Image (tube, rainbow, N blue to C red; front, side, top):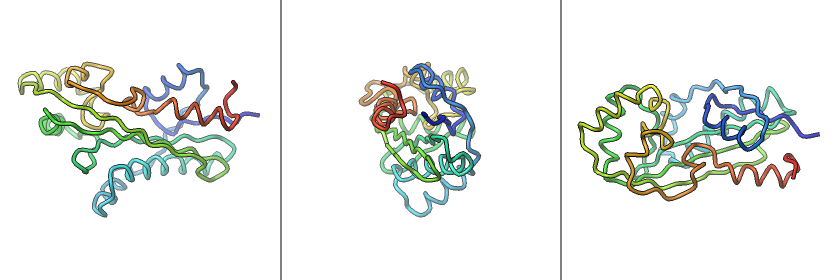
Length: 199
């Protein structure tokens, strides 16, 4: 019998990707103090990759211990700019500052996934993509933030590539699903290999 798949995330994009791939996932967002954990890891000098992995596992563990018979998928995405991790902007002004710093520069998005089953982590993966922004004007940037704040406040770096945020970029290298926060192909490959996905 194939275990139930639980997505420990409130991300509608991640759920949509799973559903589009024909997976039946139950959404149960893991309630962790992400801001405090991230701040602690940052102050300890943790690398962005390790922060993404730690937070993804914390979310999977939170629900994995409660639902041991299920496959619990925890996810997290961190923006890595010159070795420093960035999270979601707290205010429109934070978004403006972030995007001004990223303007004309290249950064990385790290999308981590961890699966818990029977009370333990059984698989993990970190996808990486490189994105380069062009030199957009301050006037256009302010309009972009005004038009899109409701959605970009939930995204590391204050943009969504699948929306108007694509206009910020001159080059993108890497897997599109990784940029959206769920490296889908490695996940499907693992589920197939373990017999959790019909083939």
